[in-house]
Image 1 (cartoon, rainbow, N blue to C red):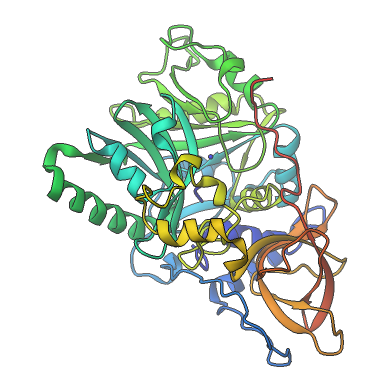
Image 2: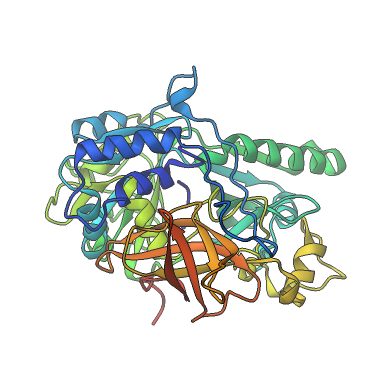
Length: 478
């Protein structure tokens, strides 16, 4: 659940921006796609129009500084599936230091998006950073750097959480944390935050070891694993017949619910089992049912490609999908993209993610996670927040994209800036309806509030709506 996921802080967004600009059309012309992709890389952050009268404090959304791989002298890294992407006609783009597929030759962005909503798509997310933390101090360390009640997680269950900045409680990164055992945790962090996350975790772990001993925590970055996401309503029906009966854990996926994981073997075309079990987690970044599958490569470098080819056997059900579809799917599902919708400039309550703070971790007398005093004060007094993350439904016209100014139309002749769009595009699932995520001044976040968004020198009407725009279809116990 990753997600997770660089052009202006994450090519996930560039993917969407370059393709979704033309989302209402049946397909995306390659010339237009290249033009938008190129301009997205070169573009400087947009600034509010000087013509707007800014008489109120405007929420500030901090865009993280990111290495643009395309302008770096460092060569782009390749995931274990790079050759497969090229063989399938992928449009490759730089993202977080990797060469990643934006979309494929067989489907346009919109077609790929809808394929995921209706059937099943396979995403390569091997650029994400997979971690394993273990030892007697693993639990305490993670409960210091996140606000989640990880001690309440049963083995092989997970939760979405946030790494928090010391003192401020700002969001260092979003992450999905899985408890594998009593003192063993697996978690995934965003590719575009790799440098920052590793430095953050290293400092926290070293401080803990200095107090509790070098053997209190063992931290491994799982570089020898690929990661793919099989997403869509037919994901389970595709995966189930591939599960090998020799797996020690239950092989019935109907009892593997959202937020749970199992180690299972797959059956290869020759009838043999995969040389290693795969960690299969029922989660994802699209709002659809699906799985993220961590594939060990130690002693089996071709295993990721073998696994992907197993899924692609049924071309009528499974297709490869890239960053473009990934971004539009996650936005419809109301999921945040780090560096755009969340950053160290926001705490979880600012970002409407207060629910990641465990109920039993809200006592100021005992809360010991980073930024606890700030975050708990905000939860206790929501009116103290200066900004709120919201969803917007924008009237027909050009889409409201990141950086577009949100205004209060109480006085239409003299609109006042009250916020900024962080993600926006025409929704493929909603027939091209313009949707956007934004931060606005506290008090203007309630559903039904009428606002305006400045797009191409024109102010379009917008309404605050609940998220997600497309209902999530996670597999839960009935």
